[in-house]
Image 1 (spheres, rainbow, N blue to C red):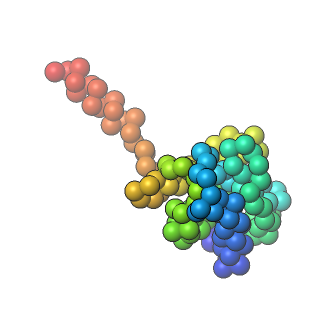
Image 2: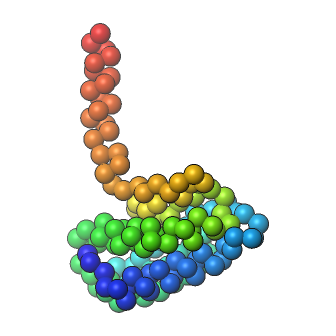
Amino acid sequence: MKASQQTIQEIERSIRDAISKYPKDAEPVMTDISVMVNPETGGLTLFNDDEEVLASVIVHEWESCPMEDFYDRVASVLRGCIHHLRAEISRMSILQPFSFLLVDEDHETIQDLEMVDSEETLVLDGTLLQGLDEDLNAFLRQLLDE
């Protein structure tokens, strides 16, 4: 899913609204940022761990989008926006490491979008652990055969 410049600006504005809730000089808190996207309405909402709304916007491009690969495509756009704002995000008064998580309506994690660490920002995507099970099984078989 290729997002228009207007959509990217709307998403980044919402992320900045969430960032403003945790100014650099405030007392650090421990939380992650959850991002919920409603595929029927295009609603995008950012929450803290207490499920308090930090920011919200309607992404009109995402209204009534087909469900096939919807969250994977949305996650890609969100990762790009988060990555673009990483300098501002790293100055938030949230204890590090913390994560941006794509969640469903029950606040269950669908995907990790990004983890912010005090040393660097790590981008987590679906390919990070791809094939790990096979590699570990092969390693275990090799150990058992020796």
